[in-house]
Image (cartoon, rainbow, N blue to C red; front, side):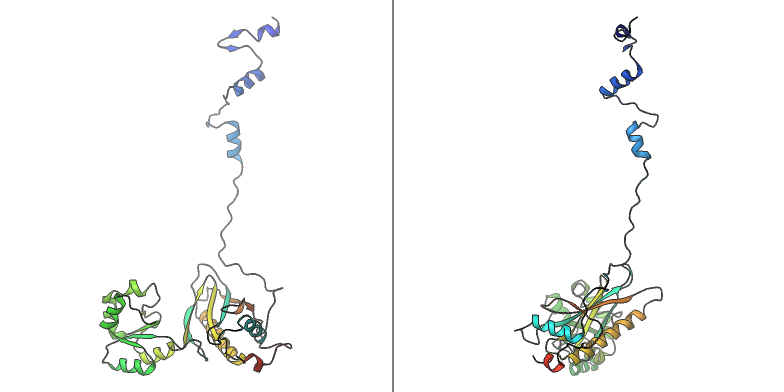
Length: 297
């Protein structure tokens, strides 16, 4: 029988045609050949391809290399910063120091309080929770506290009258403070006294004196920021404050566990309205102006 006639004769519901033509006919009708796994040829090829490995998330913060970065002495940085603050009162803009650390993301954060040799902010309002007729109340008043008491302070806080910037509690009044339930109000503001932070103490006088002109600092995202001076400070005053602050940071890092690695990567000085200038650790360079010129307000 001629091949052209054989291709057109029906046989068991199918056409008598070569194997290649039969497969093409099935594919044109949308009938893809399936295997025992239920996957088509194309699906099986995708399944058999090696899966790409997911990138592991970084466990530490990214720090840019300082090899080619511009770095300044303290006097040079102060000179440029003062140029950005021309016309502003010397007591309003603040010098801010940012210390960038080489540290892990999930490690403990450095947090503490320091009293700098030259106070930056002396207008801090301090509240002391203690019996108003006790010896601790007298110590608090003589040390510079602006508000003290127990029930009167609790009622004012519940009414939303929070007229203080720091809060200290005597150990004898800690139970009354917890019973008053002020944690949900003072906690989010960072004002709730805590034994861990040293704000629940017996030494009221020493704590108040440490807070008057004291500065708090805390590590956040691998950076510790703190105000270290006012615009009217001299370079020598700034040097003493920065040296004291850097010493406190290194001591806090040393107090951590030996298995926790934290190192200072970069120190940047800026102000309220200026960009940041990376410090190189020197007090002044050969081109720096005299310290008397930088001390002029």
